[in-house]
Amino acid sequence: MIHRLFTAVALSLITVFPIKSLANAALTDVPEQIPSQTPIAAPTDLQLEQFLTSLFKIEDLHNHYQQTLAEKPVEEITEQLLAEVHDAFNEEATDIIKAQGLTLPMYSEMLNLMENDSYFLARVQRKADEMH
Image (cartoon, rainbow, N blue to C red):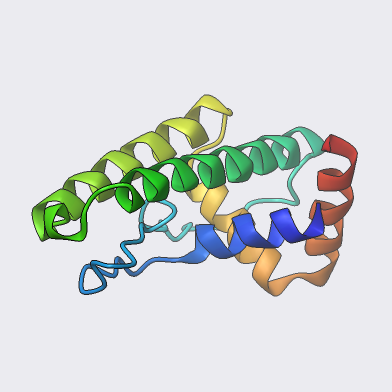
């Protein structure tokens, strides 16, 4: 569970779209992070669950798109195709976050908290273990 959590977080923190690497085509893993104007209060248990559900669904979405690209012959993977996949992924990831009841700034702030707040990271790990 911890491995999947860190994989999902690592994927969610990627913000560079590596178009140059056509053979190993990859996706960014969340819409561009939107900095929050004011920090959110400590997330509630419900928000934490919504956040984790979003993380895991975005990880699954990422894996789906990566598999789809991996099945294509390299010569078919153009910058235009990668840009289209990138846009579709970002739109679907945004929909996932919103469907869970979070705003993009809330989601982004929780990603930042995971990176910078060891107490919050421990909370996330405990909640992830409870959920799976």
